[in-house]
Length: 444
Image 1 (cartoon, one colour):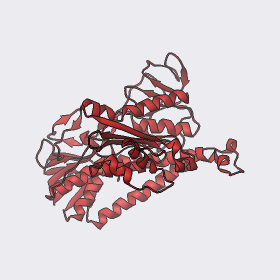
Image 2 (cartoon, rainbow, N blue to C red):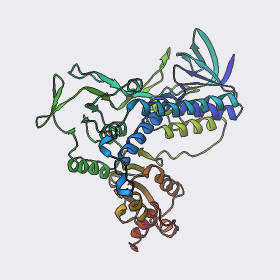
Image 3 (cartoon, one colour):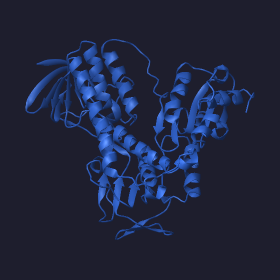
Image 4 (cartoon, rainbow, N blue to C red):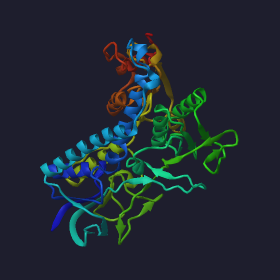
């Protein structure tokens, strides 16, 4: 049987591409080795954020008396891993069923198995040869395996999701948002995590302002972070030359490497990811790679956007995809979100820019909620005021950043932000305040 499109991998890139292809009437097949929804849905984006929400809720309950609520003894409150994990997995299961329903609704066929690619038009799975007009690789990426000089057990986040309990004194190893989120998760639930950051910066791809903010926060709160230091293991102890930390487990949050299917004729690679052009074509005609297997981004929403763009392209729909305008979200407390250019990128490009910011300590809604830590920073071009980049540190930054993306997608200016009426009291008023500051007419 021949298909119009065969997609290998059912993560945010693959499953979204499959739904779009099915909606457009293309005869579509998804081949998935194990997980509907991929890493994101099964042990990444959704479960980890659900666990973080449980941890944040646990911390917030302990401050109930500040909000006028009595009868809660913080000393008697405990975080229980198993019920929190069950809640996270129930959310995963609900979303997985939703994907499967949409596949069925749009006549997308699914095969569970491991694919071997013979060519752009032939794929083998479960000893069956499948023919296709277009082959899309969406197999994703995984944290690189680490080899440390210790006998302390190393857990992948995938493996952590199947454990009945988690370490009391974990070591988080790696850079990036996932490592930061895991470190804070264990801090919020009163475990004693240590974080080894093997290379600079802490959060690759984010503005230097964020990394400086995190280092200042770590120093102020006396967090157990080993950064820019040599360290060694002795038994169950990690020593950075200044402090010794007892460890009972290691969580691997290393930077990611592509998960490649079996190939008889491998397309060109770049830094161990599948090399693609601006339209996600590989070096082999009619073979494409979308999502984090191509190394452009590890973000789920970028993967989905690539999937939609590619299917539209196959259908002959011409569209521009602005790869630089998408949110980078970190689901800590407070959250961190960024879109557009960073300050270091503007300096490198020699663009004359202005920085305008507004702290949440002056925002009524943030004070009402008890979440007044944070700032909004707008980077704008000086001559016309076009918004080039936005950074938000706030309790709900990951939701607020979408306003910034819309502004930049429409090539909006700080003048338009300044005259846009925002409801009061809301945290999003900081956009208007920062916009007014950018045109030298600050209100507060």
